[in-house]
Image (cartoon, rainbow over all chains, first blue to last red; front, top):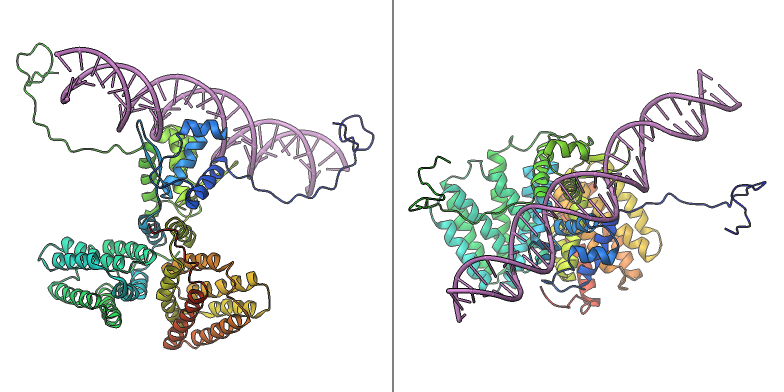
Length: 260
Length: 260
DNA sequence: CTGATAGATTAGGTAAGACCATTTACCTCA
DNA sequence: TGAGGTAAATGGTCTTACCTAATCTATCAG
């Protein structure tokens, strides 16, 4: 108040300080809280499985309203960092984001941007041979069990849906056997997307099914034998053949509603 | 009320209908609204850039409270489907989820699960050669301009930060040139993660920088010449060499705090 | 007529409080 | 000791009010 610049009423000449301010952004309270909690969670401050303080407790701690606190928690939930349970002994329980979050985000991108089927197949051709290589190197016994299970399932003469599901399961099993969580997440997302896109396209006849079963078994063998080069080569051929078949039968079905 | 099963008071024998109910889930109101809006957005009901009705309008339309409506909108915002602006003529503006969302989700996974640096590099070795191949096939003039720009920037004798940034820019430019939005998203996410992980590791000396510049130029040339095979081969060597260098210098820095 | 300025208007952001719904802990009673 | 009911804790929803930000608009000075 005792300002020598007398910037107020009654003064004769109000001299203004030449303050220079850049446009500043005022973040939302809920974002601030969410960011803070996110950092702490990722830093490992809260062990997985434990619960954050209850909402009303966070309100008293932060001085924010419950609305704001709840929004922050909701953000973290959408990002897969907490899981919110109701009832007594409920709350926001810490969890690590899983391949799930990647898969759902990728699906949003695919649907939202109307990614071409060809792009999906290209991407698969890019990453799945590498999955096979790593699987051959890193596979453990239970990975082989899983692969064999999928092979059995796909060999059964079930419905188209069963076949496609077993197909996806095998490909995902290969990714899991690679023991690379990132590739695993990508493949999970990709497989689902390709699965849903392939669902109602009747190019899967008996021949295709037989060839698929044969390829899967051969690749599985290479993985079992830890023959990385063979696994890569066979997987390359397999996914490329599949892509060819899809493109051939399905040339015009590529989403041509318009590019983003 | 006129129930022949007289299941009420005053009856002699109350016979119970053998109803079979499976455990049922009661979704949250905000999720229901978010799901509905999300489907409509992805289906293309709302053109990109337009705004959803204001919150209070949605309240009257849905019969839900404003709290609930706001939570739903917040979910969509986190998922990158709308962008919320304040002030008059503000609102929830429709947008398509971009590579951004993938990148941030992947970063959450990497940090949350403490993905090993080796896994990041493996993944890059998997997908980047394919990016190069597609870039050689699909590149257009402006892609080449972008690549050249990055090459100039990286050749300048700037700080380490500048070098790493230009490095990332070039790799991203290759992904963009592939004209495969999915691979593009993956690479964006990967590049950032590798960038931040490499930041404070001083294995980037003058030799490494010179070799990097040389490789980038060579690969760029192959892409310009649309020599797909050469682009793939050179990219393979490049990223593999990089991975080797990182692993060599940085063997124990791999995050070994514990596996998930 | 033009430009600046002060309101009015419309949007989202935050707060406070009440109440509902769900789940679990706990206690009572047979 | 077990089964039932009751209470408590916690998230979910609704209501209301007010604040803040951005825009439009009318007004007034030049």
